[in-house]
Length: 157
Image (cartoon, rainbow, N blue to C red; front, side):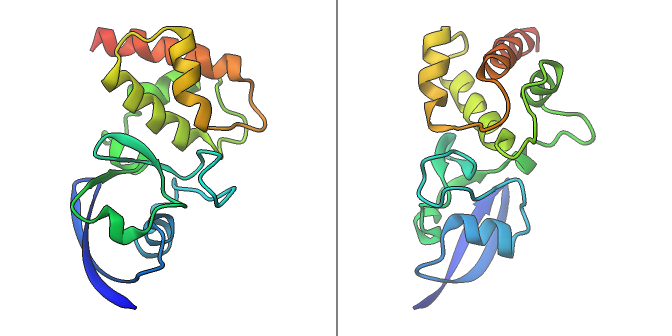
């Protein structure tokens, strides 16, 4: 069944006609052309499709778009600051915490949520929080270092 919904994505309201079965991932990529949101596993287990919903990480491949009505959705594109990278993105680049970068948007958004919830997490807390995000080609040690650098950058803001 089709229905009209309004989604608030990256601080912009979008009026869309969607099918009840459309996932948030499908709407973000196919309709809104937000390509940082990626599909890999399709069952919410890898983190490549991570977006923030009211500040918390969710798997957009597993969430129906109609369930996002009334929520604030943030994708990597929503972190844009003109031509300047977000401090978490800077940390990932600085520490080379990416290889192919397919999973990086999901990691960056998860780290953003973590640091808003806990500005000074331990390594164990970082690992636990990011356990839903998988990377198949970069080392997790680089990602952990990038999070530590992001913590320092955030404190300096």
